[in-house]
Image 1: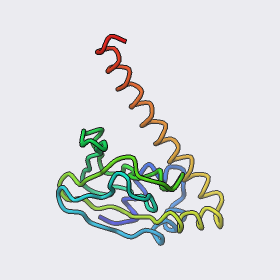
Image 2: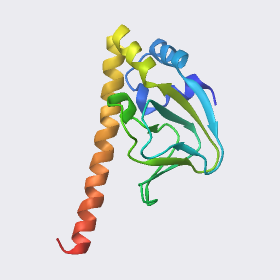
Image 3: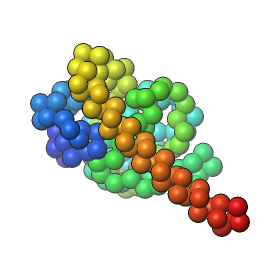
Amino acid sequence: MDLFAGLRDSYLTVGLSDEDVRVLVDLADEVSYHDLEEIVRHGTNATEFFVLLDGKAVVQSPDGQTMSRLQACAIIGEMALLAQGPRTATVTSDGGCVLAKFKSDRLEHLMESHPRIGVTLLRNVGATVVERLRSANLQLERLLLLEGF
């Protein structure tokens, strides 16, 4: 997969120009994972995040329960961009996958030197976080209804 094309199609770059995406390509490392290989582990320090370019991944809770399944173009480990700290889930490759890996400190520098790109990135990451929170709220609501609350 071409790194530019993969990032261009991702949620991360909505609203960015092709030139802006090329700036991001210069910051990214393309990495590959084999089937069932950990991409991020719960509890480890979040200093990088990923865009899934090709393949699938599974998000698991600390107790090993599958929380969600991710497809190409998804963002993984977005909290590393918002607030460094321990990871809240483990993500593993579901079959082989290819990702763009970003180190948070490099992106922070980009956001300081290119504020327009930074605002767009934060808006897109925020939208992803909101969508995941909505999904978690619906799951919790269904669980509570099943339990009779």
